[in-house]
Length: 140
Image (cartoon, rainbow, N blue to C red; front, side, top):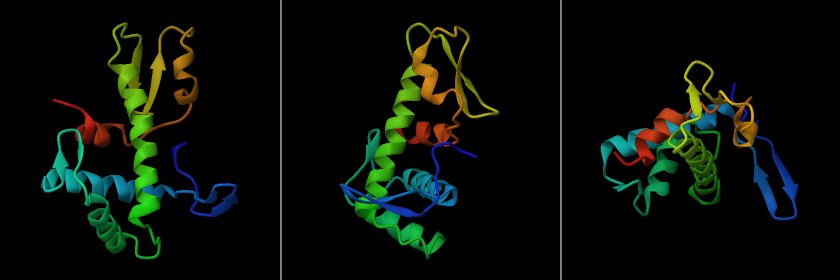
């Protein structure tokens, strides 16, 4: 039950159609990203090489054939969002003052000191992909 996953219904906005992601799509996407990372063909330091999106699209087509996820704009946009959220959490947990912690059971950030406003958006929203994305994006 992640606050970052949504139904796959699309809505119209001034920028075009916005895809809302289902939990199973997020789970499958992150799992395929981990598989791609583990194979190593598309690895480049703490990111992926060009053309990994096309490979990811092919992998997801096998797992979720009716989702119709396209490399651009669907996967590119979702990965950017997931990486942005991961980076915020990663930076909070690796910060100098070490006031933040990670609740492994609930998959969310906590702070002992309630003064920290940075945890606001993450306090009640789990991010179950933190460990997998850390394996992909964090430097050793």
